[in-house]
Image (cartoon, rainbow, N blue to C red; front, top):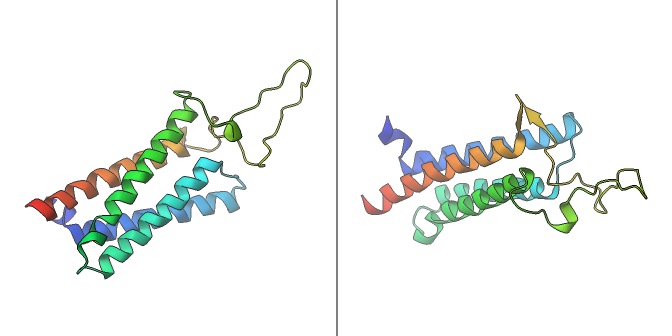
Length: 158
């Protein structure tokens, strides 16, 4: 069973499929439930698309050695972006100015919307079973990165 899970070609197909499902579910959530994603959610969606494309290229171009490391590097970038977004959502560090919640003041009691028209990145917008979508994407990207890095190391060095 472990040999099947950590087979590099099978892992590429699995990673590409899960990345495609993540993109499809985020687009479904956006248009069916009318939930506008924040800027960092859009960035992680783009990274999931890039990971799926990198996996597809690695499956098709098996003879190029450098392209075999492309899915791992894109997964690492995706994991870092998801971790950064999770930290902003949980107030571990400050959000960028364009993505921070602007609280009402005594002078202006109305909530202020962001100039870009997106929801702020530092507040959890959509939950499934009480868990934010940011935590789901962090967990998925972490598991995919971990599994693919093991399959990559086993392929290169064993």
